[in-house]
Figure 1 (cartoon, rainbow, N blue to C red):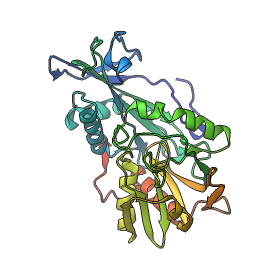
Figure 2: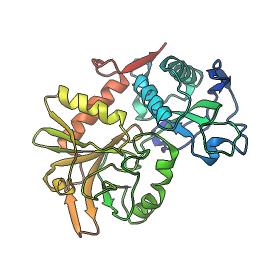
Figure 3: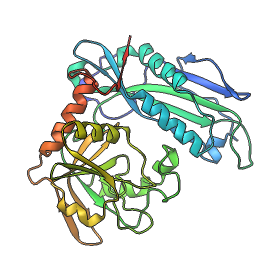
Figure 4: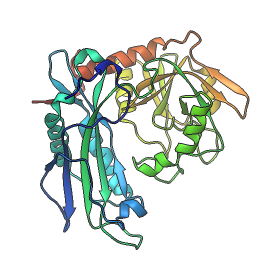
Length: 339
């Protein structure tokens, strides 16, 4: 195995030793299989390719100072995948099977879990796809569930530093009553054009407004949005936002720190009242926002004037990371230790 420069990993794919799979046929899931090749043999008429019957998840495993490996909130990821399955009519995988797959794939690839002091983690990607060959628009009768892992560094190359984001009103990420609340690939395909345009202009991400009225904050492409004001943690509530497990965790942590948590509609003009703002998700954890530019309104909302994260963002980030790495007790019951 070539030497990995753990401290300089990007958020990208690196081949690892094994992946694990379940197959759904004849109305039942089979036994867990361990594979040492990355390829999937797929029929050209598979429903995932034609009708978007595809859902995925993202979670992480961390190596602690004590050498033990901790997986963060895998039951929540199982529940969110089950919600996706109901949303696009795929066969649901039980929490027990999901957990067996996740723990097994981490154990089999233990040598790729980055060391404690590196700041890197093992990213875990479960994928569920419809595989039966059909040309009629209807749910698949067969499914494949695959989990692979790869060691990763920070999602935003800047790491835990404030970055600028932009509002682009001419783009929507998801329809109000569409698939925005499910983790399906189509939502990400729909965000690619706006995302690339934002990157070309020097922004780290797009902050989407609601698709119906263009008045309320939705989310930041690959992450949920939150704002801090007067000891309040404020995050948007919407029928098109993917419920971020990191955001759910930060709300619990904020509450435990004595903050007042509000999950509600957030009008764009409220941005100018926030002392701090951030984007949060499994990949990014927390990405503090330096400023948000609304190009159509010729307006900028500034949250960091010195290029540093805000005090509350830093507290939340450090607390969450401490739980993930085992530096602080897991009083919420979020961690699965790989034995």
